[in-house]
Image 1 (spheres, rainbow, N blue to C red):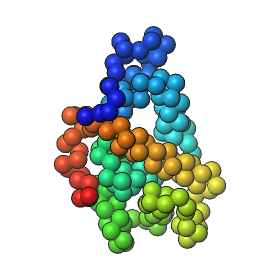
Image 2: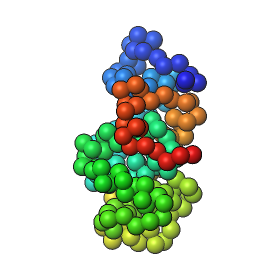
Image 3: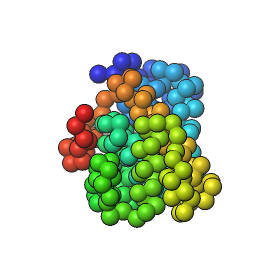
Image 4: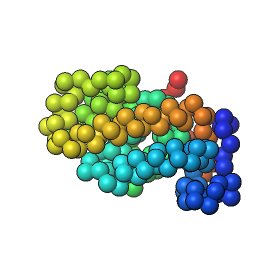
Length: 183
C-alpha cells in the first residue's frame, strides 16, 4: 500500500486536475505535490514524445532499469508500452540474458543500450567501452537523450519504491507473463 494517499481529480484545485488525465497510481501519488508532479510529468512527456532517440531503444533502456532494480510498477508498465514501440518478447527475454552476463542475439547497439542502463543503474558512471559502443550507432544528441532517459527512470524507480506505489490490478498480469528476477 502506498505511503501517501492516491488522490483523485476532485481532491485537487481546478488548475491541477489535468495532472490526472491518466489515472495511474504513480500520478495519483505524485499529485500530493502538484508542482512537483507537473515538472516530473513534463520531463517524462519530453522523453516519450520529443527526444531524437529511437523509441524502441528508449523502451529497452527503461525496461533494463526496471528489471535490474526489480521495480514491478515500472517494469509492468513499460513491458506494455514497449510493445507499442516495437519491443518484442525476444527483446524482453534478452534483457534477462544480458543481465546474467550472457550474450543475447540482440544487435550490438541494443546490447550497448542495455549495458549502459545496467551501468548507470548500479553506479554513477558509464564505462569508456560502453560509451564507444553507443557512439558507434548513436549521435551525440541520441547518446545524451539515452543517458537522460536512464537517469530519469533510475529516479522514477526510486520514487516508486520509496512511496511504495502499487501496480494497478489491470497491469498485474504482465508481471506473471514477464516475471522479474527473484530478489
